[in-house]
Image (tube, rainbow, N blue to C red):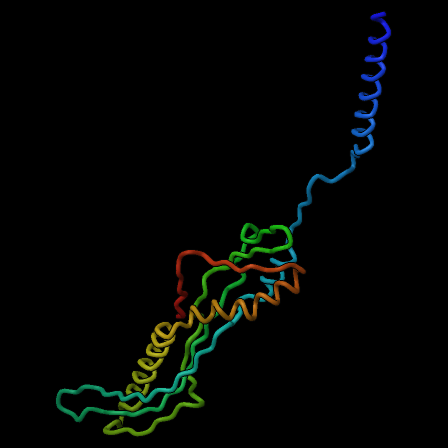
Length: 200
């Protein structure tokens, strides 16, 4: 009498075991991908090709009064109306492979900090308004005035937030370019420290 229930239990066990194995083997695929890994060399190459991308341009107009001091002779003076500009940029050639990461459908790019990459006098739109007692010292007087005006342009650009404006413009200009290249949503991040490349 005991053998009959035992036989039933064995049959049930074999049936459940067969169903379990069937489900496991049915879904088993030795070629199934567990995960995907994507490299973004094309993004890095495109950014390197862009190089230093200019994202902010500040234009300045200044009236410069310059004077050279002499002990015995009258002091040469000059008044100049100077126009110049300062350019904020991001150097994309500094972006390395580890600065680009993918999370789901999003591309995260860690960019180098914005730089004040250029500032200069626009001599074509600058002019000498007046000079006094210049004579033989006129060139030295004008050189000193333009040099002082150029340093003022640099400092004014930094004081007026050209680096922060460059950062903001990156989201408006650079982000759509990278999204078009990668086909993904792009998030731009920056280093924690501030840097300034000083032109020579």
